[in-house]
Image 1 (cartoon, one colour):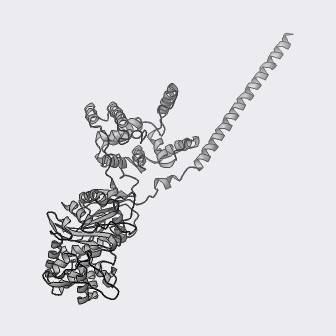
Image 2 (cartoon, rainbow, N blue to C red; image 1 turned 180 degrees about the vertical axis):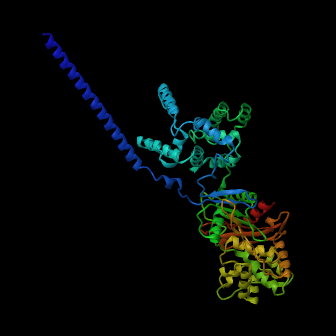
Image 3 (cartoon, rainbow, N blue to C red; image 1 turned 90 degrees about the horizontal axis):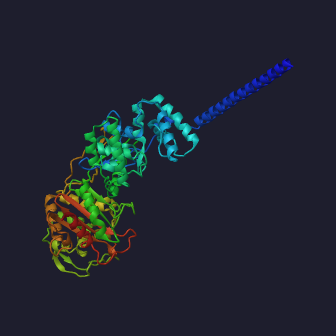
Length: 589
């Protein structure tokens, strides 16, 4: 009996052992199967990863940075990234503020901060929500550079793989450099340097401790902690960062206290749209000068930013529902301002370059021919009806003055006298004079051209007058002084040729006298008069479609146009002597 019991107990133990072994083997198989499945999943995810080298060396549109006549930045075109920064070149507190708040053990742990992840998990469990994150800077770099923001397990797996790949390929400093240069903080632009320029109008190299902390504060959520959009939240988080920097030994308590007092809402960057007509024009000039380019360019221009801003403020309220444009250049041709419309955001069409009828503002070309052929401002001419073929234009006010001096005819902008002068000296002489002044090839060979019927741009017209006030020497407008690459190597530098004397000194003296009379009391441009004004000329095209004034103030020649884009008539009260002359006056007064 006892033997049977022992045998039965032995068999039971054997069955239990066999079952336990089977369960163990089954668990091992299941584990191996799961491990194989995970391995296959990881391999599949790995195969779906983007091309790492391609993204690290991704191409982007070449940025063009425009600078004014003093070397100050105007704006940048196609700049999606700030200037590259590095741990080696930045003030230490800039990158330390980032490490202090984002990953204080960055230089101690591997690609993944296990301790940080564990701490974040416990915190989230305690709070019952996602209250803390445990991603290392390396993980954030992997996510920012290579991956989309989709919240999928596959993306997290790729992030882990990429983190190990990054730290295997780069040093910690290089990973941090990648992070600082690629993180997106403001307006689709990348890098802390871009944020520094937008938020504080300075490079990352010039940030104070307070400003560095404010930019580091944005890393958690750029919009939520923006010093522009939410300054209170930004400053509160920046204070925490300063405390962490003290706790981690990066700055002293006194430095933190000073920085805390300096924390302030960011000032919005100036509206660069007021320069867009100019930079669009300069970009075309640069491309025609050096051709296509693949690297970033620094384009040094002739722009006077203060003058540009001044004109941009004056133009819209003066022209009302109409459009307007202004060009200002030195007498040597350096363009100092160009405003091509009242609102760039509403219309990018540059009216300073549009072809319009100049009306009476073209008449100086005819009078120059007369002066060159021996007439003087005191020479008498006859103002009476003129007709040639079917062409019979009248004076603007439909009055005729009979025998008057050349100066009076010019100041009153009568139409018959320049037509009779053209008849006397020949239309070819007028076209030749226009060619010497730089616009001859754009004009039609007909009498209506004498009264400004042949279209030209405001820039062209202003250039004509610049020749007169440049002592009769040729003028070629220019907007670029030099172009360099980011390292300062000169790609192009203006090398002006000596000007050509295209007008005789006596002719220039007489013409400047005529132009001065136009802005005197009784002249059509008297509204333009102000201290320092040398003279000017009004112009109005048929049916008041265009109104012009071009004048000189000190060493500037300023052209003003107003009209409508659809070429319809403005009010009959608007002439070159009203709104354009008033705009000129407001600019120079």
